[in-house]
Image (cartoon, rainbow, N blue to C red):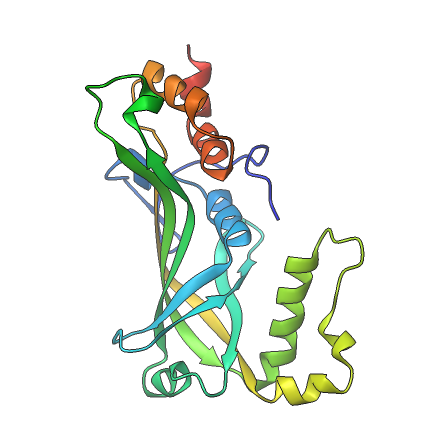
Length: 223
């Protein structure tokens, strides 16, 4: 997993697909590395059919180009999952990733006249879906490699032995080609520097605090 406390984002910008656009708010300003870290650290996403009738929580692995832009997502689901029929009828999906989040109390801000809020980071991706039985084994290996990275004795699906073929026959791999991507990273960018420092001093250590530091590094360094 990536460590957000030491991973730098690239030039921050609002994004739709691969194109830059003026950001409507400070929460819509982010970089490709921010997208990558969120997906790698929070790989479990809602995958929803285009009509919204079917949805499932699925772990996904991102594929990125040389410029660190997300190009596609690789995953798998059970053959019996209703998403299979939904994608056969219309091969489009909305994919929702949720990153760090948490309640921010006025006690953290040190101001009783300050309104409580909720900070969070998320991604909404519109994608073209290709269900590919030939991709199934690769999808399993990619996910295991990502999740087992850093383990003293990394596990691989091949260790299932004779059970592997039986279990693999019950699932199918798929590829989600990214058509549109929008993120919202509400991490204290609109707070006064003194209020932000108070929140960070009182907020318990964890992912949310680390992400808030990352997205406010320049403001915090500015005094």
